Image (cartoon, rainbow, N blue to C red):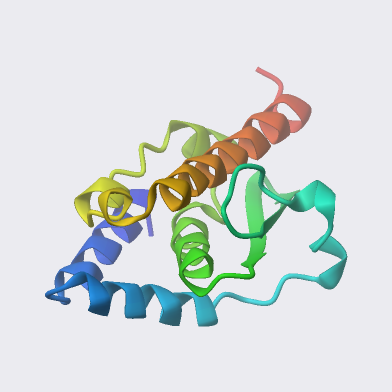
Length: 142
């Protein structure tokens, strides 16, 4: 599935819900399905700065693709991370760097988050893209 296909799938899933209470509940469910992150990555160096809650993000590079694992101590934030990883994990550095993540605006996520959570979302995306740039620089010679 392409990155855009997954984004379209997420938009369709969120369109099934009439109000944001149901959408928040769905986010919480998504967070519960996030695979466990290895405890060794729940350290300061993997924390995303600027998030209201604690969010740990680890990236690994294999066969030209970046795989992410993550966790958070807040249920809604964990759901947001699960959405981002669903779209971006298993992608090439270029796919991640060039992604516009239009689904975030299309489902209305940013406008329904508190300012500190919206800032955290921005920082999560920034960190994911920084990992992609670092792996691209390290492994992919232009």
